[in-house]
Length: 223
Ligand SMILES: Nc1nc2c(c(=O)[nH]1)N(C=O)[C@@H](CNc1ccc(C(=O)N[C@@H](CCC(=O)O)C(=O)O)cc1)CN2
Ligand SMILES: Nc1ncnc2c1ncn2[C@@H]1O[C@H](COP(=O)(O)OP(=O)(O)OP(=O)(O)O)[C@@H](O)[C@H]1O
Image (cartoon, rainbow, N blue to C red; front, side, top):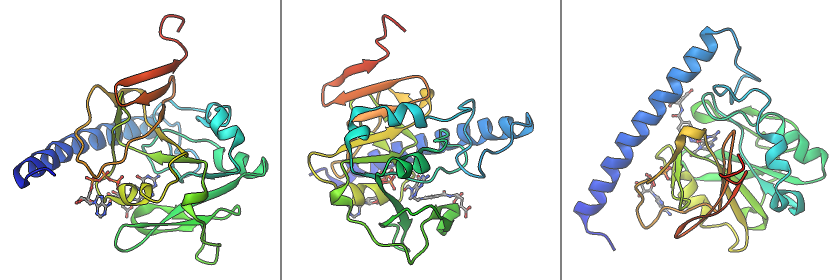
């Protein structure tokens, strides 16, 4: 266990980093909007990610073989996921999406093609959509503000995903999606923070382990 001072130091480091990363996303989004590129499908518009990450995520073997994938609906400033959710559905994959509860914990509901507005600017399956069991997802795709090469993840600060990821099966693959410049050398984390196995950016796919990157596509020397 960390003492109170150590925990406070980590929290402060996270808060500062979060503020910097969110400011950068806002600036990039403003520049994109000012440039007339539009805001994508109304959510998830990200600087320069035209076309989205869907094809590369769908081509991952872990995703291709999963019968149930938990994902999320993009928010403005996040990397553009394109039509990932609908393509998963079309492939016959069960898709679970988060619905934000008032305590900031997440329910996961089955995506059946419709979304309604949720809290804090999110969009979620309607409340009538069947609740899904996150423990049955073979792949869990999570949003992040930053990730490091060991798979340590910084979220928006609600602890939503830290709590949700506790419910994920041990053998599931957790994938974080960030912009290239949000792949950092070090992300401050506390013991409760849950790491990720794979990081997808608009130009790279990294496999992370406790000692750092264990594999990369494309290989750095060939890229
Ligand atoms: N795409 C996506 N979905 C997600 C998350 C996320 O980070 N990204 N979350 C990760 O945990 C949860 C939602 N948590 C959130 C936490 C804060 C804000 C937020 O700061 N929103 C803006 C706009 C608010 C509004 O429009 O009302 C803000 O408060 O300034 C949004 C979602 C679940 N779904
Ligand atoms: N498993 C948990 N159960 C209860 N509270 C938790 C849990 N994990 C984290 N928290 C609390 O949530 C708050 C935010 O945590 P943290 O800064 O790690 O969020 P984050 O990982 O950046 O955000 P998120 O998980 O929402 O993407 C902290 O006060 C933390 O104590």
